[in-house]
Length: 248
Length: 330
Image 1: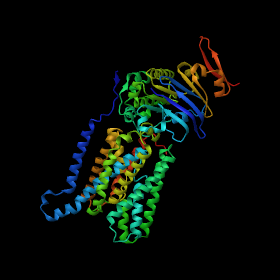
Image 2: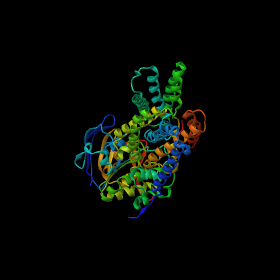
Image 3: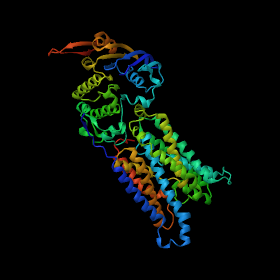
Image 4: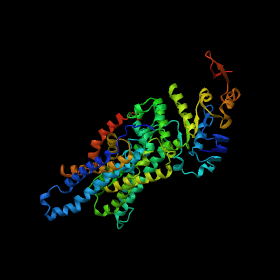
């Protein structure tokens, strides 16, 4: 079980005094406008950024005490904008990073990548590439995931995914959390957060605006503060409801 | 739990490839060293083999292997599949430093040259390699910019050697041809005794970095997330590449395109797993250079500059590689 927390975390020009803690076995969604500090926060928590002020503790030990090789066995992060100039096949992309190209059934069901394992990665569509990259980082820590001891982070992994794969991705995240893993997802779809997130963190100008259980944090007031303008809840004709944005 | 087996190019094929290439290499080596078996009892022929053909074979082998392995790892490190020590200026950096020091007469003539030549070339390769690496880090978004910067560096170094050519006397001219065009006939046992052990050790160390290099295909940040100590790894790789290429230049001068073509074709053939690409690059690079040595040795009456051969074959192949590479938009 992962215990992750940060206290008074600051990064010049990026993050201001962020204090958070993360409970194992939950899916956390990170929301916020462009440039709000979501990516920097994820990079700090993954151990990728060293020059921050404040403390980050992982399982009650300072994160900086962990070697990257040790972190890599149970922590993974999906980076935005990842590409390679080499003509790797999809199988290469998977197994050169984690030494295995066996895609577990649960990943295959959600991501449906085995039909193109023999193809050149570069020739896939944007959404197909994204699905391969999601599988790539999960395979890196798969043994830890099966034990329920992984910290899994996605930075805008939903970019380019069609609606079916977006929802299959969220169900996969919920499944990983049920195994006991900690799952952190940054995204831009408030409605998906209200449907799938256990907890929500909202960032605004490098500060943490709100954090807590999704149904409490996803209030009209918080969302209006976070995104500006007039966020409203609308009811559609079929009895469902969702958030929308209008100019005030 | 059921799993879906992906179609990985099986590493099982590796020993077959490896042994086939070693056999090819040995037969080429045999052809180079013993062209006339009937005359083996002739003392003159024995002398020729010992002082001439054996050093030629060793020079060709280690130079081919070093250029290919150095280039293969630089290509992944600089995130550019078309990086070549000749194109990005490592070879010409090594040549420039060596040629400048040798021709300016800064070194007292009593100093043993076979110690200092490899050192000078290593310094030159390391300097231009570090420069390219710094540029590559600054321009991480554009891999073609690295190639362009490398071309600039190699052009400047080439031009400076060219100016020395203009102002030098007849004795120096032959030496400068060596630094510009390469030759497999300059090396003798004394310089090999210094360069060979270092090259062999560096080749061995470089070929063992395949698994780490595999994590590099998606960049340094992602390699760090995969558990690699990126700073240390990059420093070591750069140092190894500079040693390999610098020492290869000290033995055989500037040789073009071997480093580009060998790893490129191996990736087409066996895929991108560097655990295979690196050792196979060593064998194929050695094999190719031994063939070049046979070519320059037996098919022509005068000794051809090596780069004339490699560039004649390599230039068109380079254009072909550029055309089929979708991402190289300069």
